[in-house]
Amino acid sequence: MTIPLNSKVQHAFPPGSGTQAEPELSCGKLNLETIRQKGIYVVETPGDGFVSVAGMLAKSGFEKVESAHLPQDDSLIKTLRKEARNLDLILLDISQAGIRGLELCRRIHEEKALKDTPIIIIASKNIWHEDFIYSAFLAGAIDIVFKPVQRLELIPRVISSLLLKSERDLRKNHKMELENELAERKVIEARLQYLVSHDELTGLCNRRRLEQALETAVFHARRKQYTSALLYIDLDQFKVINDTEGHTTGDRFLMSIANELRREIHKEDILARISSDEYAILIENTTEEAALRTAETLRRVIDEYRFSANDKEYHIGASIGIAMIKPEEELTASEILARSAQACFEAKTHGRNMVHMFSHDDVETHIIRNAVNWVPKIRDAIENDRLCMYYQPVVDVESNSICGHEALIRMLGHDGQIITPEKFIPIAERMGLIRDIDFWVINHVIELLSRLPEAYGDQKININLSMFAFQDPALLPLVCNKLAATGVSASRITFEITETAAVSNYAHTRRMIKQLRKLGCCFALDDFGTGFSSFNYIKQFPVDYLKIDGCFIRNLIHDKVDQRLVRSMIDVAKTLNKKIVAEFVENKEVLGLLKEYGIDMAQGYYIAPPGPDPLLTPPTHA
Ligand code: C2E
Ligand code: MG
Ligand code: MG
Image (cartoon, helix red, strand yellow):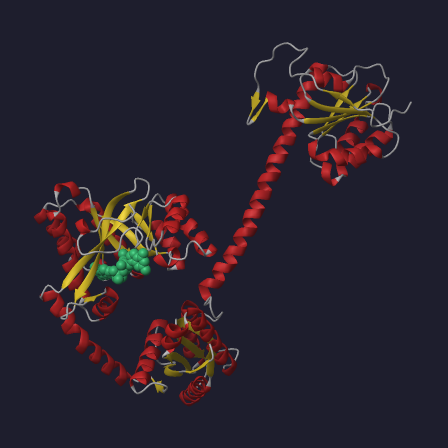
């Protein structure tokens, strides 16, 4: 007798009805309730005198049991395929199907949508022999139950099969999640990799990539005994376009210049954009004469180029400096870059729109000229109290309260003008005056802490120190003595060290930091994220805070890459058990997003700009 497939029996007994009260079961996240909610499809053999398996399941509280009689045709596969999403187990009674039963099992198992759905075969005892059992398992069954089916035997097997399915689903979902995450990560990594070595605006190499190429060029020069050249190109008066026409036009201009330059060089040459309006070209295996000729051609190309914007035509010149890489000289990448920049500076001072080849005499004159200007000014400032500190509050994001200030140095010009650190710190570092500044700052800040009223007793101040300070044996006694003399607790001082400084003399700096931490001072890694390679160092670096560099924060709202980077920096900090601080928080939206990401502290113009007195700089948005 054939019973049409759509003669389904839906058994929907309330759980446990007809059964004795059962104790609450649970297996991992699955409990008895969820197991009973699993979808089971029973293919039964009609009229064989045995109790219906679907009925047994329903009696045991399984709520989503569907059953149908085994059809003669192929329609079963179609039905199961359609139902696949809702199926967690198939019970296939093949007791009267003969060899066709195993073939059916194999076909169900091979269905793509059903391959993870366990199949239990129900068979007659009279077909029992070992070959049949092997064949059933090979056909995809995970279990065999012989007739007459006993409920006590069936239910544990059904439960164990459902658990298996649930485990499979879990694993599959997990694998899919991992695969998605991996794909997303790969895209981001590729983009980061590109950003690490390229300039986003022009697509040219960036400074970092150029430095790597320079190191290779130095190696080649020595091994292959040839000379190479680095051309440093500075656009004269690019600022005019940028200021009068706006940044978008300025960007367009920089891209067109990049294209002009690209046209004039060979494909083996490295063309890089190394700062806003500065480009560099590395030409390997060339002579001084050839490099001068190329530079002259490039100068002429830029000179003859006309840039149009808003019905106006701009004419721009370029100053080009050249530094040669010779086999007999062992220079670092930054020394070569400095030489070419120096030569470019000479070209500018000789009247702009010129080419200049580096010479040792130029360097001497430049250093002397700069020293003549700045050294007396800096000395005068140190000796005559013309240095002063500004303080910018740092806010604890969770409690919304000021937890400290960062001390930022300023120099007072004779006309009362306030000179920012970028103007004099780099020169002080090169001219050997930074030690006096660093020590002046330490003395000044600790004294201020000792004078702060009681109410500010727990306030901390961050002190920025140059990389030289951490290599100076006098630093530790200076801090110890000053703390002892003023009675200020070391825990109120956080020293900020930049990532580059931390990495440059790693072992020595690390030792010094450890000693100061032993004293009770804290440490923050400043400008975190700017040296992409230093994640490894950070792991072993004894600092308490990581300060994400402002360049990642400023455009956070609009820049997806920055968002991803900041989130991973926060992850790194949390994993390493360090507090994480964001600087350059310039608006409410950025602060909101950072809060969402789990930042610990924030600093920036939105909270408060640096001011001359820590007591007088109440945060505007604490
Ligand atoms: P830094 O330690 O990363 O300091 C943060 C700089 O960002 C400060 O500039 C601060 O005024 C500025 N800033 C703060 N909030 C915002 C904001 O929301 N938006 C923007 N665009 N900028 C913000 P400043 O004071 O000119 O200091 C520049 C750098 O000079 C410092 O960078 C630090 O590396 C160095 N420096 C400052 N004071 C000292 C010092 O006492 N000793 C030494 N050795 N270096 C110092
Ligand atoms: Mg700082
Ligand atoms: Mg910083």
